[in-house]
Amino acid sequence: MATLTRETFQTTYNIQIRSLNDGTLGMSRNDNLHKTLDELRQLPPDQREGVLTHLGDTDLNELASDVNATGIFGAGGLSHDEKRTLFDTLAESSTGKDLARLASAFDSRDDTQMLAESVANKGSLQSRRAYIEAMSPRTADNDYGHSFALGGAMTEKVDKDAKAILTVLNSFDTGTSEGRASFDQAINNLPQSVLNNVVKAGVSETTYTGQGSYSVFYRTETVNKLLDRAAKSGEAAVKGKIFSSAADVVSRMRAVQNALLVGSAANPNIQDITGRMTTLMNTDPRGITDSLKEDRYGTRLCTYVSEVLRNNQEDGAKVLGEQLAQLKGAGTGQLPIYFFEQTDPGTLGTPYYKNAETLGYYAGALRASVDKLSADATKTGSIVKSILNASIGAAGLGPTGSVAPVLTDAMIDEAVNAANNNRTELAQKLEDLAVPLDSNGKYYRGPATAAFNAIAAKVRAQ
Image (cartoon, rainbow, N blue to C red; front, side):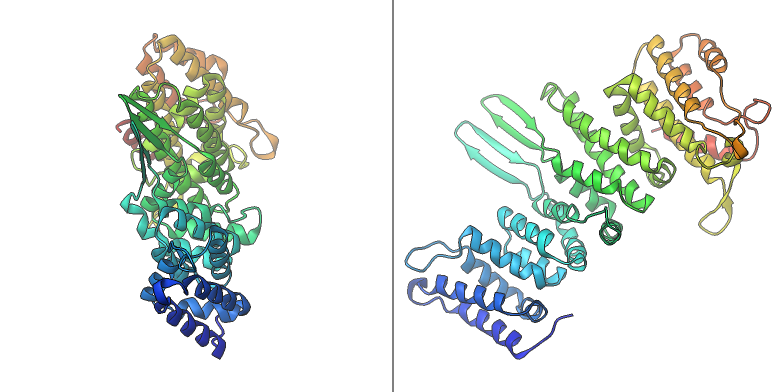
């Protein structure tokens, strides 16, 4: 809470007057700016907060113009380090809303990023959350960076405000309860479309065009850091939102790859992001998959599954099989068949088969993705077997240590052989064999089947 004192109002007034009086030929500007910086630093943080609040947008624009002014004999603005000190001083004490107003005044790419770094390093948890929320409407304009040189042009396809938000998001320490709660709240407050832009900024896609050539480069450090933060989140919905945005980015990178414009340059970056998506998914496969159902046709989950298998089919099949086992109830202490038929209250309180739906959503994505890999029948059969065998190994024990009825190698072999080397039918077997077994080793039959089949069919139809 700001403490409004005589010193607060006096400092505000002094800044306003100095901004309008730069002296003859502006030669008082630099001295005035140093006086402003000194006054701000001398105020206690609780008194300093009110200064930025009481400076209007016009005042902030005048301040930004002075700080960035060029000139000699006192007419210049602040140096790079002095500007950072100014931003640090204001970020330490100001509200997130006022810091976003300051970002509007200091609107260049470099200034926006420098201020975001100050907010990330000096701002309180509350001010960082408020800054992110206030900045979020600005990410839709694709404010990219462009530079030109002899023979070529470079475009940084990163919205500067989205990059600023990502910088602050990555400053939350999700290894602590306070940082985790602030991170979760910040993500929950961002619309999915904004989060998509923020995550897109995290791959720093840069294109270079010149002399008949076209190249695309990526730097994925910041999106990877966000995925690492998300893995420590306390909410499945937060994890699901970030997973969904990451899948969108991977899909875009794959499209560039498939356009044959950049050779294999995108592959290591896609693999790196996909690996972290796996780490994230493995923290809560059931909760994340359930949250992904907002994407009704499963395109993002299919993107992920396809990349996991594309990177390394043997290891990828193991990853997917273990996730499949979780979706069938592994680790819950329930037999899969009872877990499958368990209900949850729906939107209006009417029970629905949530677990069957979630399993059907995942199984549909497995089937669609395996089918789209366009591998030959032998390789497709091998993938199907590997996924199902991995799910057997991860199934675990039922109540009181009893072994739950599970698929056997013989059952899998029989189903795969029955497909007669038909690649599409092999993918179908993967979905069919995801349904749990009863105590007699027979596939479940009951009311939850319709929920499973309906959502699996929708995902397949994408």
